[in-house]
Structure formats: structure tokens, C-alpha cells
Length: 411
Ligand code: GLA
Image (cartoon, rainbow, N blue to C red; front, side):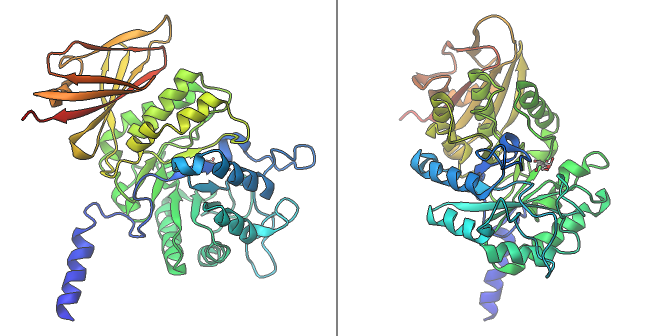
């Protein structure tokens, strides 16, 4: 017995070196779909039944996830954001879905989503109200966690509106405990740092023990300016946020807006490439019922997804700014490297970036040789290279070249 306890102690202490939330979930970044950026708080089902926040929306999305290859590509969670609930709790004090828009209730919806082999996410807020003005969970953490577990929910996005900033840590921790107490496996998606940054540098080691992913920066919008702003924030804070990311706990730069209205195809490629480099959750917010084939192909690109889901779980970071290019790198399993070069010069045509030791110090992994594959803008095996190769990639304005580099040992 003593030996067993000792073994358990060593397992708990040493198997989890960065101290992640110990719920065994999100060992690679969560993949799925979240309604917010595309559908927002559209509750007008009378005049816009096709796009309003209702059970039909999630059921239709679940159907398409299965029939159109999304599930097979790895997208697993269908997530409800704000504006799903009734404005009042029920007579027992429980949260309830809006009866008109969710006539079957969330449990039935979860059953439906599960019957498709998918998972259901839901949204709540640790303060007195959600950001959209629906009932908050303050004073109800245990009750709400149990309600979500009883409904069969698999992910909770817990927002931080209407709460004093100095109580965020306590609130997020208490909800994490409440979720664990239910015994159900529920991915816990937090916004703790986003609400704490204006006052104070968040304690990332503390929040990593509590959340599976956490939003750091402002809400993404359907524009290149918004995507660039999030990338800039991430690079500016990378020394603080990158070291804490790893299996079970991820920085969340917010949803993928690929397939909507605001990004050119090159900009969509940049978002996809950089979200993979940043080991971000891949939560699409778009209309999967009506998405252009190029955006779909990009979101389902298995080479990019395998970088995102690399089991080593190290977040990449910006390593250089050269001549209006940004270089981002992510270490992968087996000594491989993922490399994204973004062309930040937004005029003219494609510009050329030479892969040399001068522009890219990590090119030294090509000693004595390396194998280079270009994944974006198009898939190309670029062959075996050495430190002195003259390899050049062409990148459109606001586009990104994504490459993987595999070091080779010469026999
Ligand atoms: C906040 C969050 C968003 C979304 C809305 C909903 O702004 O950051 O992601 O959940 O609330 O009201």
C-alpha cells in the first residue's frame, strides 16, 4: 500500500511538469465550432430563423460537421456562446434555455450532438450577468456546473463580465472545482487573463492549473486588422505566455474567422497558419452550411492541422521581423520545425523570402541536411537542403508561407 501511494505521488508530481489542469482534456488544442463571431447575439428567430441562436442552428451545424468532412478533419466540439438562455432562472434557480428558441432543451440537443459522434459546448459567466445581459453564474457555480453535467455538456466557455477583477481568480478556480466535482469530463475555457490584464499581469501558472484554455486578448472580428492586432498582442507578450502553454492548457487567441466576409484568401491562410503555429484552439466561427470551397479546403488542410495538433504541444512564437516579413516558428516532435513567414508589406505583388542562416538562424537545423516541405500557399515537396542551399519562397501581400523542416542525419 505504502509503495502504491508513493508511486501515485511520483506520478502526480512528475507526470505533470508544468502543472496543468488535471482533467485529462485538451491534450492537443481543442478543435470545433463556436457561434459567436459569425452569429453573435441574434435572437430574432421570427425574422431570421436561419441564423438566429436556436437549437436548429446547432443541429444543422452538427449535421454538416459530419457530412462535409469536418469531424473527420478533427473538429469535434459544437459550441454555444452567449444568448442561449432564458432571461430568468427557473423556479428551482436553475439556468434554462430560451423556450422558444430551444423548445427541446439543451439535454436533447446534447443527445443529438452526441448521436453524431460530436461534443457540445455551452457558455456562462462568472459574474452577475453574461456579457450579453443574460443570467450570470455568481452564487450558482455548483448548481450551474451540475446542470451542465446533467445535460451532458462537454465544454464550458466561462466569461468574465460583470465581476470585480480582483475576484476573477477565486471565481475561475471555484468553477473549475465545481466542474471537477460533477465527475463529468468538461473542457474548461476561461477568459480570466483578458479581464485581468487591464489591472494587473495575470498569474499564468495559477490559471494553467485551473483552465484548459484562456483568452488573453480582445474579441476577434471579421477583419485583417483584428487578426493582425491579435498576432501583435501575442508576439508582444510571448515571453510571458508561450512558456506556460502545453498539453492540457493553451493560450486562446479567439476564433478562426476563415470562411466569412472580411479576410482575403491570403489573409485566411495567414490566420490558419499562425493559429497552428501558436498552438491555439481551432474554434471556427463561420457558417459551415454555406462556405466557399477554398476556405473549407484550408480549414480542413491535414498538414496544417497536424502542426496544430502536434503532440509535443509547444507553442510557437515570433522569432524575427526582417524587411517587412515576420518569421514565426514552432518546435514539433522529432526535432521538426514548423515555420511561418508572413509578408507584412501590403502593396505590390508577391515578395521573395530567402531561407538562409542570415534571415533564419534556425536554418542551422539543416546541418548537415534537412527536408523541406511547403504547406502554404500550396503543397510542394521542396526536397533536401543544406545550410548553403539557395531556397526562396514567394509570399503574397498579407499572406503566409508555411513550411515544415525535418532535420536529416546522414549515414
Ligand atoms: C465576450 C467574449 C466573447 C463572447 C461575448 C458574448 O465579449 O469575449 O467571446 O463570448 O462576450 O457576449
